Length: 34
Length: 563
Image (cartoon, rainbow over the protein chains, first blue to last red):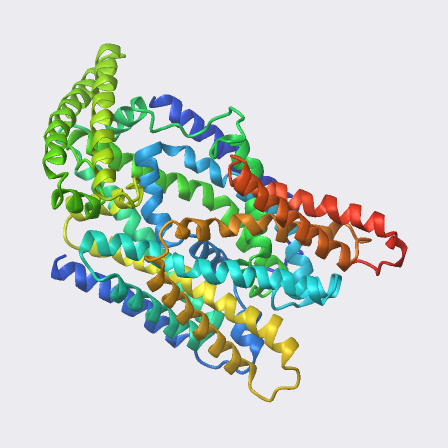
């Protein structure tokens, strides 16, 4: 992996989407069982 | 502890230390010792970053925090992925391009020697004191619950971590951390599986979660904004972002992990993988605490999890009062257990609102009795800590889990203690060599690897010595714990000025940092602002003061070109 073959913008968006997904899922998890 | 537990514990620790020593061979120069010859792959970097951040007290107190306060603590980590992205875009390529050994070296290239020395000095001060507490806090819990001598405990953890860190430098630390993370993961997953397995007959995970949720322990995300509230979405995203940016971008114990990457891409991937995994990992550790909480609703726990103040109360004049509280607790907790079971069973057929409200009433009654018990303990030992959060998880492990699993969880706790300590003394040794020794002893004929090893050993001995002394510090221990948050914002501010305000000179940044630090300390002493916000305040003030001083001194045009 040299870095040239990686589209870093997409990786950053993936990390941020993962954060949003975590917040949504954790909120839903709290609501389902409360 | 059974023989099997001792065997698992000793086997895990011996394996990690021997593996670390095996990876210690062949250090010829400082680059190989401090940065592992810049050959680390992204997964080693990611595991190393995670193992450095997660100390033993993380694995002891996080489940306890969920038990006492619910899962809202997870919001503390929400700013971390954002910080990983910013670091990958800015800090990582710059540090790689300049081929620096420590983050503070960059400040001399950009500003001047005194700004570099200020940042390196703040790091050595706060991290030097904090590394002692990294091993002291878990050792205290283990010594109280297992009856071990805390000094022996500290000596074992300290010497095992020092052996491979001094011998092998960053490469040994990183490889040992990979195995330590595996042991920690195995320990926590096994403990979680056993908690579920040991739920009372006829009750499952869904029942346990519904009981915990009804009692307010699944409060994961809170959208309300309150600057004095530590854990809500906004303090987590904003305060947590600044804290993570400071910690991962300017604390050498973390910077050294990704500077050892073989390329910008490897270092970036290591940080970004940490950004992907950290929030789910913290969620699972908190979930473990929630499951322990649920299990304790069905089989009543003691009034207070820390046995030391209980023993003091039972041996003193408060004994009759405490025994009365214990008897009341038994009734209240037994009643709550019956109500919890009734709710869990009724819920399967519908909303069960009446059973839920009966459970809440029983829980309120139990909480009142516990409060009474804590007040008696406080009367018996006025100096004792009224919180038993750190003791909850290990108490459960020792009292409810079978032989073998206890040893594995203890191995996980020891591994976490050693992994944090080794990375921290490794970074303190590197900063001592690069930012102090190289500047003051130019032209010395002593090998830099030898100087690094001696400095690492000296910091390790200081950490163990400070930890041995920590029990006499009392409430000062908490102040030392806060030290990081008091300085991180200021250090981050210096770096951000260096990156983005290229016309600001060293003198302006230096005095701005001192002024901002003064304001942060004033906020700490005079205001109720939650500590996560100190990072934001310190950072923004350094930027504002730098620009102001630079404008007032009118030397903008004489400034050198930026980094």
